[in-house]
Image (tube, rainbow, N blue to C red):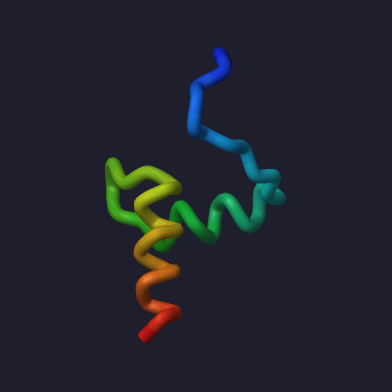
Length: 43
């Protein structure tokens, strides 16, 4: 994967990745899923 300015990488176990994927909607990125979770956690 080429370096992209302003993008970082986080390490997740496959199990955690799959749980995130299950929380998202089709076509939703991991970034979108995580942002949605962060917003819900602030409430």
